[in-house]
Image (cartoon, rainbow, N blue to C red):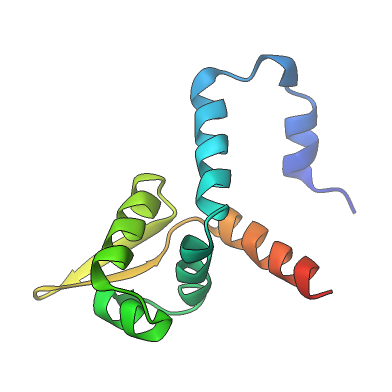
Length: 109
C-alpha cells in the first residue's frame, strides 16, 4: 500500500525546495539529533508533563528542560497548556512523533 502523502511529495519539484522548507526540515532533524530532546519527546508520547515532572522523570535540571522545551516549542514539536501557574507540555506534531517512534523501533530491531 502506497502512502498518498509520499506519492504527493514525489510528484512535486524536489530539486527546488524553498529555503524555508529546507530550514524547517534541517531544524527538525537537528531536534531529533539531540539525546536530551529525544528523551523529552519520548516521555511526551502519550502524556503531558510539567517542566518539573519532566526534570524529575529524566533526572535533568529544570533549566536544561526549559531550554530544550523552548527549542522544541519554537519548532512546533511541543505545545503547552497553562493550569494556574503551571505549564503542561505535550507533543504537537504527530508526524515527527511517528518518525521518532519508527526510528526507535528500528534501533530496537
